[in-house]
Image 1: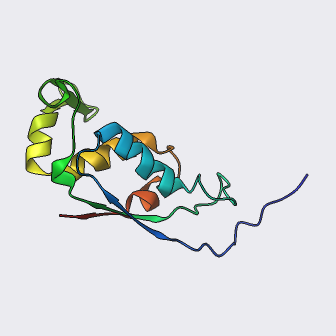
Image 2 (image 1 turned 60 degrees about the vertical axis):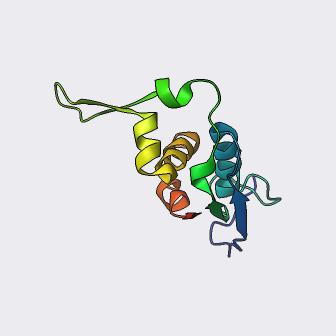
Length: 125
């Protein structure tokens, strides 16, 4: 059995993605792949070796079909009657970067690296 060294010095690159006329889901898939570092040769799930991602022109993203008007986001506080429903159009109107952030959050693995990876997404208008 071989062991991997967890104390490896990680070199993080900076990637810039233009979100103009890109579909939200496909854009989020690219970003999630760069944050996890799956495209690197030395990828290992127990090591966080992802890169920084700068997303530009978030307000010019593309939504297919009627998703922008029909999709709803649900969250629950855990208490009775604690269901909160928010329309995607309202979230996109208030802060378009939150749409990408929430989509990428759901695509990342649910482990201890998730919050650290999400901090490496930067948004530029």
